[in-house]
Picture 1 (cartoon, rainbow, N blue to C red):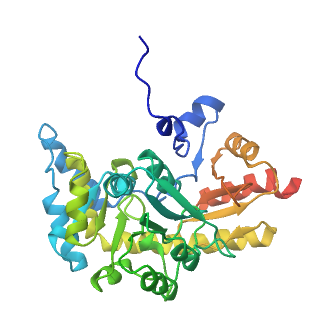
Picture 2: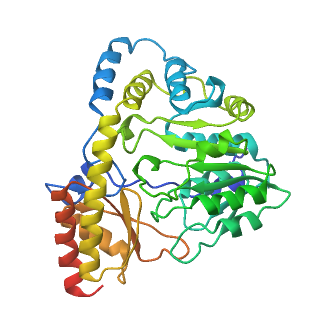
Length: 368
């Protein structure tokens, strides 16, 4: 008797490979001091208010968390001027992306994505045997929202927009988003993934919650992993119309966010001083890095986030290992139009200088 086999579409799934942890590089290469610039983490650390709340919540670890996350959802709703039933929590925004695919896509249903965008969109669509329609980017690596709108068919249920985009660091403007929403109307649910929302300082950058308030068929995803420094505890949230949230709750796992995550996020939400300090640090160091890259003649995509996409003329997989040997972890990326590219997070000044020192030794001094 043969053993049960997974469906073919499951066997074809790619496995998400996260940025290498510091401990793994130390173990593999025997390198002592490591700088990790691979996962777009906040180099300043975690919101102090969040840390204090997490320590307090440790006393109740023997209890199950609030399955619906009432206190945190209520605070998010109040902050954004929406109703409680318009908010859902996720184990990071990645879980919310997977919920959307499970809730809205049946076999062969389509989701439109940008070709150079967050890899989790395609992975989530493939996990439910959906079909990801990848639209090429426009010049400069930004989402081509007009082309994405044109790619919508009767089988399209979701349209994913990373704004700003990981891994390119680009963003869609208010005018571009307005045109897309006017074009697609109610035909699809537009997913506005705003994981890096708090870092952006551009007058023409759209706040997706404004579109939700205007009645557009959108869901806005945000996270506490980035500017609030809670990446290790995994919590994010989505805001949408009540009927969308009700649908997602049908596929949400019980107790999907921990008591520690809820407590930390609730405290972080009001830590505006931490967000301001983190934003200002990022703006200063992003300017430093881009200035230094330009001075060296290294090609990169201008970014509005806390990372930069850099183009190399050498095999980026080999460079990835060579950078590690010099104590720096970067993130190679792949896919159409991204061969030879790596994503580098904005760190502390000493971390950024260590990256530039390694860059000078491995790339600038040896030809790109």
